[in-house]
Image (tube, rainbow, N blue to C red):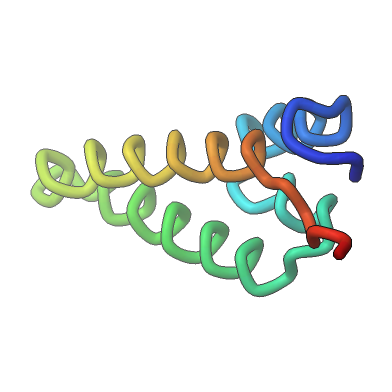
Length: 80
């Protein structure tokens, strides 16, 4: 990836919109991909239980948005 604002980051952000963590996987950030996939997925799964929806649905949405922004702003490794 070239850096922030590159076409690769846009594709990664779009991938994260559909599946949390997929954009990070496209960028080669495996731990970030696993983290967002599990955390956002669990938040949405707990929100599916009507009792916990008031807490976990907003949390899932906020984390999903952070996931998308994180992929879009990724700079990669800086070359010295």
